[in-house]
Length: 192
Ligand code: AMP
Image (cartoon, rainbow, N blue to C red):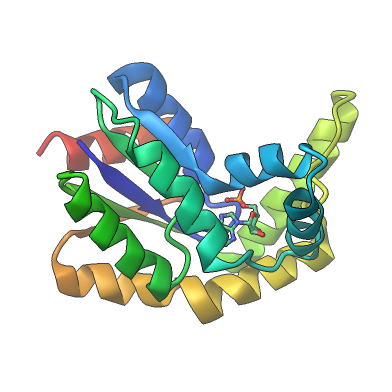
């Protein structure tokens, strides 16, 4: 199965994707993770990406589409989970074309629905927890970047909900439930 997990920053996309990797042998394609790896590479591209990410803005479509293209060519037995991609209509169109080229079907688009104020709190808490555990918090997990990330989401990513609804493969899930309850709701959609 190949699925997209859509949702605002802090909705739990990564957590749910990780569970599917562990239980269903799926491959998680997180452009956020790929970009965090690229920024530590010391390349010129990495430096530009770092600044954009820390401000909470979106990196260019060209960069993320290139990252996804490379991964799709590798294939996946259990299927792909697109986590944090696509984030713009141009990325969604590019993904359609890439899926067709690689003969990959898109089986479901899951929209994790959450409340904005809860999101901001979750992300601020995620940073505090990381620091308390002696780890480094994500540079974009602070209230200011989070507000920019939310604005980017509403301006550029949320239209994808209508886009995939119109294509006929959108399923909404209440992302405010416990992690386990979201896992079961997600499983119910994938197994139907
Ligand atoms: P995430 O880990 O998915 O929250 O992504 C962290 C940051 O990486 C975002 O705030 C963006 O700056 C960048 N990013 C991740 N995925 C994309 C994408 N598909 N398009 C543009 N920027 C992205």
